[in-house]
Image 1 (cartoon, rainbow, N blue to C red):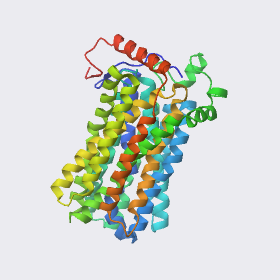
Image 2: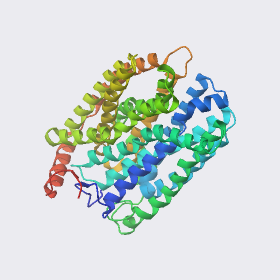
Image 3: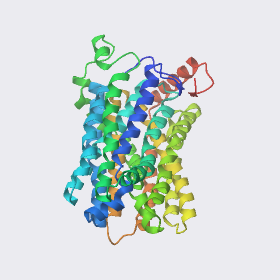
Image 4: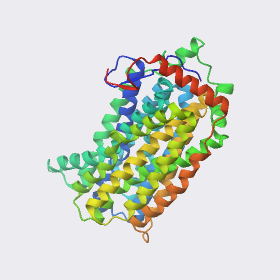
Length: 450
């Protein structure tokens, strides 16, 4: 797929162009999806007592919340190629809001499990976010655009850790008991998600020159059938070993972040004898690093590409992954609260930079099957979270032991980044595209406030 008139700079304070509207709406929608997806996580200590859940049952609900996303991300990637990111995001936001609000009807482990399973579908919003920014921005800034939109979206994992306990406390101040309070609190993110879906349809478009159906009608985009259909697109991506290498890499960075989002609050609550609000605030710091950390991963990816081309992007990805694994090993051994918080922030920096670095590479794997590639790699993040979830559902394995084993797995997974290679022809083609995009940009840099 060849999209024309991509933006070669990110003008953060602008909403005038379709590229910047897509950028801001996509990260904000993903942020809200994270808020709904993990809204129940900081309240799990209350839910555990209300529904009488065991550690194993909590672990199963964590796995459920990320498992379904694997399938939905795969579908959403090829769906973007077919109907465009605008319609795909609208449907996901509006339909996804229903189980978020409906989780309050859960009265047993089984119904709570099914609700978390259904909510997990909105995690596929990540694929649409990365797809939309990939078709809107030129090679010289696409790594930064992808990383920033995803990072600010992932930030929802931090804000929900902070805001949901406050929303819950505010509801309790109205005289509501805890059993009803956590149920009412989940209505808030559900309502916001629904209206965000309406806004996405109203204010964005699929590509710089219009929506996909308009581009196809003008002959500027091939019809979504035959060699350009969903099946062919997915097959082309699935038979590329580089896609599966990035699948493993993303499993070991975003999958780890999802796992920490799910367990951080209850981990600090149980291990350091903190209040629910304090544990939530500390856990929220991990996600709040997304304000800049994932963006840094994309920025460095673009900078490494300036001198090293696509090989430079891959080398940076390997370094970020290796540092993430080492930092996680140190975090797992912390028994003093202040040290645990400090190392957690270092670990958070590298895990999120690794995510940004991953999707600094993804847009260059196969432009004709961009949605399928993004979907498969994105699904890897959730597959990693499912695998990690089994470490934290066992009654015989402590959270600290689970984190240690997870750190070893990340270091091993970092080697998969070195499997990603490009032909000399592709390297030369992308180097020219990068140079052309830089040449068209007369500004001071990729990021601008104008």
